[in-house]
Length: 331
Image (cartoon, rainbow, N blue to C red):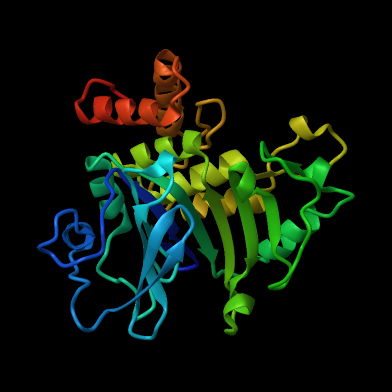
């Protein structure tokens, strides 16, 4: 986790990656063993006796190996020995939300951004990224979101590119879902304290995405030095906007101040970038082009140039090679 302010914490809550090689789970001396790669990525030798590893079957892979914490919680999932034609030369690696938490038996010394950077160096790519904003303050953020998301008012008080109808509150003190992960991207909000069974005010907002057109720019920004706080608040602002109630048309009313304050608080000391058409809106500062917006445009422009075969995976790998070689500036 990266602590931005006493009442706000921002971090990665799930990181799923695809490595461009069919590794196996075996000892260090075996060719294509995943163990030396894991040690290089994390700095940990997972063949040591203190680590419990279980194995079972998996979809698209012969085995899924799970590394557990000292308390038996899953930390890392590794899918080895692919069984389908479309993933013949791949291995999957997933850092769970528990591994990326601040619990004593989590992977405290593993920096997920460094793991992502090293996987990129190998020619790999993310398949899912979950960004999480935790709020511990006194403003009833979750109740405000619930009120603005009611079936009779949400069309007037919410702006979003995500596909959804009125978000239905379910479980954990009424969890809200804006969008659907099976369609690529979802923002969800819930009472984290209720989910964990602990006292106090702890509210969680997550953006989860498996959309390649969003994952690649996210990877470029996170591995290129853009702060996790800036990426998270900027992308939440882009995908979900609460609007102040009023008599004017929705497009002529300002964003709800509590939402502006929440995301501005989440940025810490970084410039708050509001991602809208590649521009940013700042107070007291000359506006400049958004880093994420420029990255998205550069990536998509190059994708359109190359994508005449219909093989999107080959296109992404070629773009990644060009970026590593310095032949495709993104800023």
